[in-house]
Every structure is written in C-alpha cells, then in structure tokens.
Image 1 (spheres, rainbow, N blue to C red):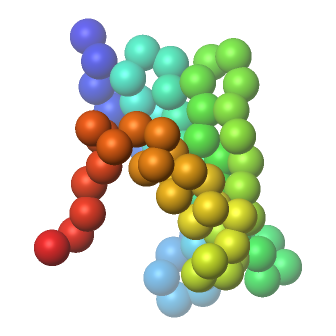
Image 2 (image 1 turned 90 degrees about the horizontal axis):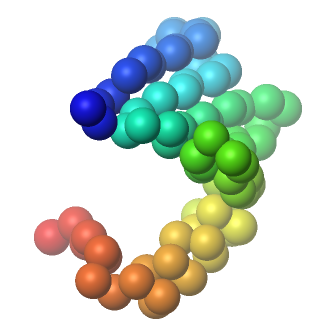
Length: 80
C-alpha cells in the first residue's frame, strides 16, 4: 500500500536544517539539503532522479517546476 514511509530530519530550527528526506509511495523520495549556503533538492524514484539547486527564487529548481507545469497542465496546483 502506498504511504509516507519515512521522514528524516537532520538539524533543527535554531541551528538550521541540514537535511530533510521523505520516502513515500512504493519507491519515491525527496531530499532537501543545505550546505555552504546552497539548498539542493533531489527528487526521484528507485532507479534515479533529478537534483536541482533551489537556492534562488528563479533558479534551476524553479525552472524545472515551471517546465513540469507546462508539460503536465492537468497536474498543476497553484496557491490561491
């Protein structure tokens, strides 16, 4: 059965988070890391994934999200 399988958090609000990982579904994951002022986001499945720099508002990660939104308009969610 698909579910959120695990959540790993390294760090805390006072000292800063270094890594957050969520394992979900049957083989999917997302991992967010902060190191040397960069925030990296890794999104994947068992066989691989994509990693993007999420440090800037209109950076690589934002570009990936916008590309996915354009390619899959049926899945777009926007905050109202």
